[in-house]
Length: 105
Image 1: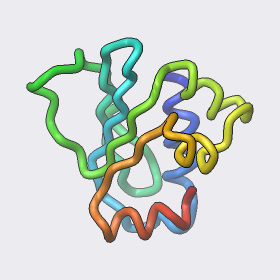
Image 2: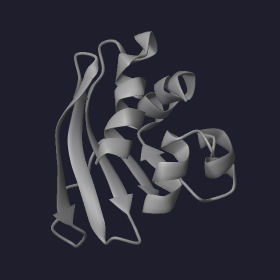
Image 3: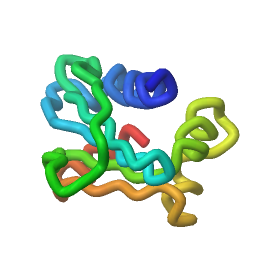
């Protein structure tokens, strides 16, 4: 949870994120958990983990990765761009959100 708060907090604090109000999810495939939260007002709020399954609500911005990749992203051993290009991190969002996130990542 700490690693995810670090990555998402940096994303939320970026001036390009100003005005965004979107639901977020991060599916951690090796833990079979999904962390849900909200990006709004320059901060990430209400982060909580739920078991992965059919009942998990679909967020506006969705990340999928292993917990090891999340930690590597947080401590700087892995860059988001190379992780995404190599298929280690999956990012799903609407077209408008993807264009905006491109500036953030």
